[in-house]
Image 1 (cartoon, rainbow, N blue to C red):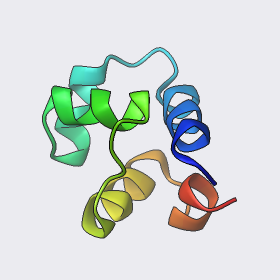
Image 2 (cartoon, rainbow, N blue to C red):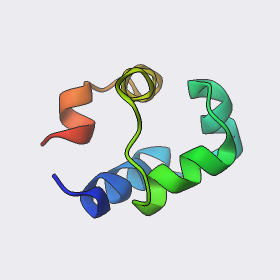
Image 3 (cartoon, one colour):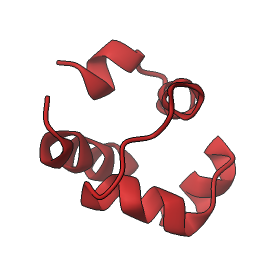
Image 4 (cartoon, rainbow, N blue to C red):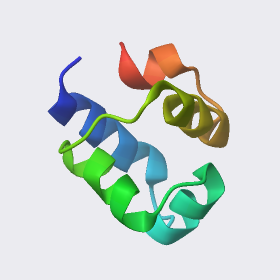
Length: 65
């Protein structure tokens, strides 16, 4: 999966939540989350795990399928 597909999936998962609230929930800054959601960066493995836990999805589902 490429950066743009991952970014789109992250935006869909966030839904109506604010970037600030999701960023707080996963332990990153709002600007870091914005970079992940824009496809400018891919999170490190530990952040991928935190994102998956927050959304109650697997890392595989979010980042690799």
